[in-house]
Length: 151
Image (cartoon, rainbow, N blue to C red; front, side, top):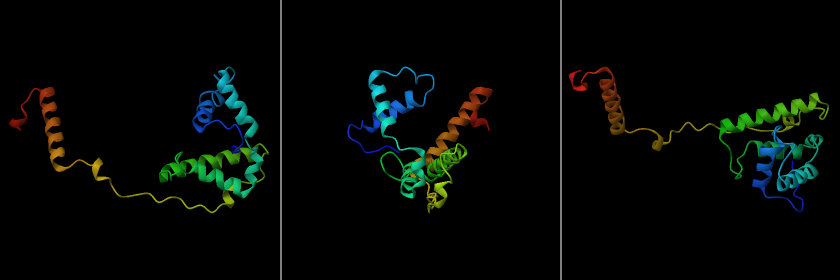
């Protein structure tokens, strides 16, 4: 919900300042000067929560929550979890009286499909499986004091 205003710090600086100091209640009171400047810029250039009542702003937030930092689509489970977190944050805003209704419900959104294809690089081949089983058998033999060839 940040404006594209002049003097905007780079995304990495904003993220670091918010995570390490802005959202950290133990560190929040004494940030370094450069971090304090970033946090002050964020405070001046963040839209109010009531701006989420606008469908375009709510859509932008949903797109950002269900995507990755590099702009690509997030994994289906990540997108679903982040959408739920955003919806819960909006519920809390309604509870506090900052929003009248949950804008995320008015947005048409389809959950990304889960890929059921297995990456062949992550599955052991038959030779690797035999080698692994032989190593386990040898470890059991060493632990129990018997010979794997005697079984």
